[in-house]
Image 1 (cartoon, rainbow, N blue to C red):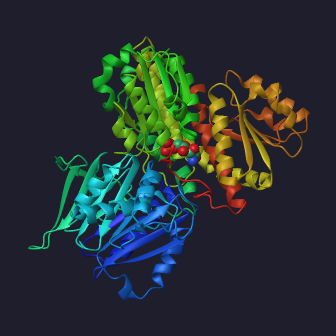
Image 2 (spheres, helix red, strand yellow):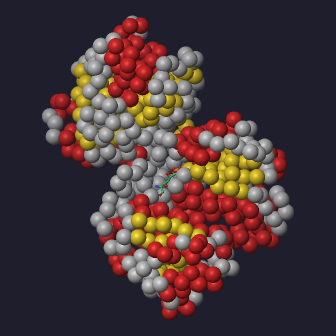
Image 3 (cartoon, protein in one colour):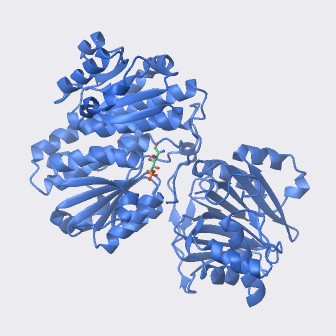
Length: 620
Ligand code: M6R
């Protein structure tokens, strides 16, 4: 899982490429590199570490060494070979003719490598990508074809997932891009083209983009007569494809931090707006119903569904655990939640009339994507709840609902997760209204949903109080997050948020489970955050708080404004506004995100890019 960028045109390539890598750094950040094609030779610069390290290296070079309008670049999250300068991309072929950047995994690289070694090829790195560079060179030399055809023929021998950008020093006015299973977007400028793993590096240059489909190869080539760059797309099996140019709606200021010190904090504070955008145009209050454009033509199939399976990974799956309650309660559809990765590799007992709901912010999570492919083989109807428009999952599912929360850049999911919960509740109303959920009940929930953005604003106004609590608990080694019913999933999400950003060990647990084992861990240095809104299980949650306090454990209680009694029991109390029980997770998410954020900042961590993680996990 990595980010790739390419540029061909009239600008100096290197600043465009470095800026593009900065935008894609969320995809991986253990090493980075850039290759520039100038005067028939490649200059390749690579550096272990963040893009900023590469940027320093490049900026120290003589301007002459950098000038030129063609280049490719890469930010890496290691899959084959440790993070190092040598394993960083771009990779050159042995003869120095080919240079390549790659996001994905070549599954059969070892067998190809063996053949290439037997032909005398030598390898400097441990990567599958260097094998691909040499395979393309080998094909090009033996078949005596141009770079476009060499890439095409080489890819017929490759098994795996990839988005690649390839240059050949013999054809300095040509760039080849290909994709199977990993994303690639091409930005169409005025006699210039941009290539990237997603549109974020492109949007400041052009709004016109082409999403490459699996099995497609795009070649951008300069016409020697009029010097115009021409883009053509064909498939790996050599069929010419039409170009479909989309217009991006993303604004450049949506990609910046907007004055906040970190993307994570900005994205937490984006939530009133992002929830508004999730709701916008979808509530039909007079009918007590919801409208989803992407589901319209599947109404009949939706009526026939009698089971649902929700798949997702990490936060997305935890939001599914909340959604499960909503689908059963409002739509009366038996629902279960699975890891995408598990669903992919097991027998499905009853696929007929079961709908698969795949939840993913990035729309690129391989485990989730693969589960959709499996479900389609089983003839299940597949839906996506996806944020990134045009992403692989968005295109793979039969029908989809977009979150519309804008780009989420911090590795920790915040505004996407609250939107994922909200969309599931709205979808449950939609499916429920087909199955006997009353108009009045639909209206009651929808009215409360409309208030959510304002309620989140109230919570955000109290961020300072949560910062204070964070300072108090910042040195903890362990943490419990506890909750019940809708908020059992919320507790798991709270624990994930804290552990991934702060590196504090945190466990999310249904509070009812506490007395069946976990409570033995409680002692005075083991705090618990207990989600205890004034709802149907409030008394039970209060008992859990009392049990923990009786054993000397510190408690942060999260409850509803006006409920003062927990101030006498818990060590600290965080308040959320009153709402319907089913909607409390959306509000409870926000203080937990703030707590994770402030504790992580206190501990001096790189909150936007926690160690060992990447924003989208495009490998299994
Ligand atoms: O892009 P996705 O929503 O499919 O990503 C799934 C998980 O990798 C993601 O939610 C991850 O757990 C986040 N780092 C959590 O904050």
